[in-house]
Image 1 (cartoon, rainbow, N blue to C red):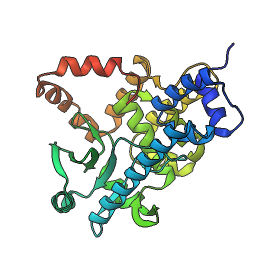
Image 2: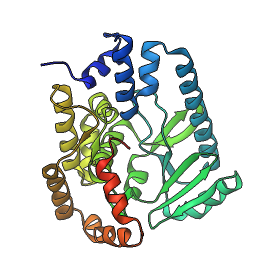
Image 3: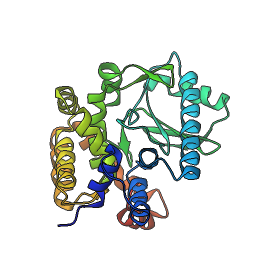
Image 4: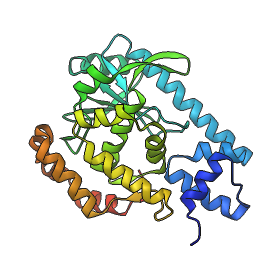
Amino acid sequence: MPESESLKLLRVLSGSYRPGAIEAARLAERARLNKLYLAFLRALGGPRDELTREEARYRWFLGNAVEVVGALRGLEYALFKFRRPVEHVSVDLDVLIGRGCVARAVRALRDRGFRIVVAEPYTVTLERRGFIVDLYTEPAFAWVVYMDGGRLLRECSEDVELAGVPARGLPRGAEVAVAAAHAVYKEHLVLLLDCLVAWSWLDSEAWSVAAECGVEAALAELLGACGLVAGGLAEAPLRLGPGALLRAYAGKAARDPAFRATLPNALRYLLSRGDAGARVLARIARKSY
């Protein structure tokens, strides 16, 4: 059986495989879809112009993130879905924020030129010159809470370093649990970057956080999906099937009162948007996020 592109990409990242020009172009697209483009270009050493642009984008992201961290100093917050085994250029900066700190956080960011784009029950999204910050009181999708943000802040946040600047973030084990919950409950897609998080940092702490936050099923589904990718039986990004989603959602609803109580919000969320049908179709058709 031919080796999958995902496995070849992993070998490129490890330095054990160097593709030809035509294959490199295909693997570059696979890397983009899996949020591994910067790591891929670094492993190949170019193309030089493209690597230069991507490095500039990474510096731009870090510079903005450092400024956000400075604005939030003294508040109860933690960067999440942030620490990864490889450096990558993210599309936004996700921040858990204490409920009592939301107004001050928004004011501090607006003082630095950010503007509010969306204000929802559990999230405030701000933007400045293309850089997006999502402030979450609870990790949620479509107004449905899938993890306890307050518990993560109280019990899991720790001091971290961001480009030499002190910040608050989640420990690696907690990031595994968060990555699993985000991939399964919110995105329904598993990226190779998610697998690298699990393969690199899965430990007893990850399982403990998953148990405390009621996302063990999501972690199990993530590991199962990543096992298919590692075995060359599936490509990443890997879309989770109806069976996997049904297991994860049914188990979550049965055991998590907050998830169960907010689940009906998903319908209200869709009905509040005039383009609900187009949104659903786009979500089904997308290859990554």
